[in-house]
Image (cartoon, rainbow, N blue to C red; front, side, top):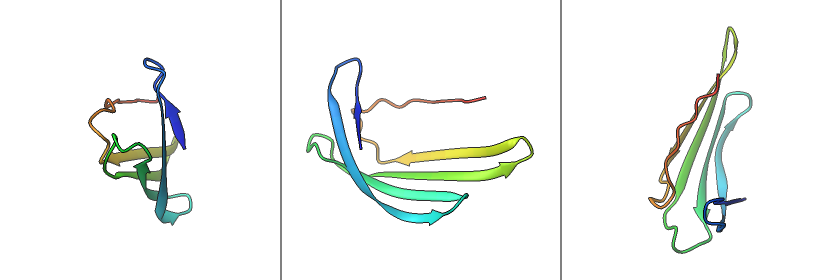
Length: 76
């Protein structure tokens, strides 16, 4: 997978391993960047839960390199 920082034009690629999959409920995986300037391992957990109005989605990231700015996203 890759992404582009639109403010700088630089692109970064990373790949990983799925650690746990519970269909319709949970996805947990680890990613490592190919760029040695982005060290460490990122951990991602995506949880899905049925609620009366649809689906509650919770995404948790850990180990994100400091150079990548943190963002908060709220979807109504």
